[in-house]
Length: 202
Image (cartoon, rainbow, N blue to C red; front, side, top):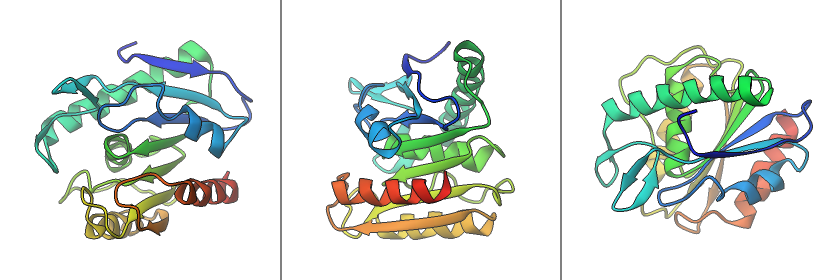
């Protein structure tokens, strides 16, 4: 398989939580978050295949806040193929995956949603940006999404979060948004809100 990763078996009746780190992270980073959201779930932490100044990422960017969309497309397809292979390798239900991403990881999770119908069953996106503009989205009526955003996030302006919410809702997704005021940080309050959303939907 084409990504360094860690798989932890949980209750096969629960969703598999796909854990996608932020810039500079590793496949280990969000295990604490997955365990907080659903202690019974299987966990799959995946490392990004791109490096920028020695930091792991899931796709290249042209400058701060400007994505290399061609590379994002390629890396998104690569991650989808990895999930197909991993489900065969580990025996989890490919149709029962909830993505949990932070920052760069949330952005590639968003790209999966924008690009493929039924890529995941649900998504928790902590401090994401809009992955693509002027793109026709698939039918997302069966996809619930949680967005964790910051009113004072220096890396992800509030307008990014509201645009992402509106675009996903326009394709039929049921989107909830949580607003914090701790910049780009992932706070305990945001995790608690994400867990409450997850318990409502899964």
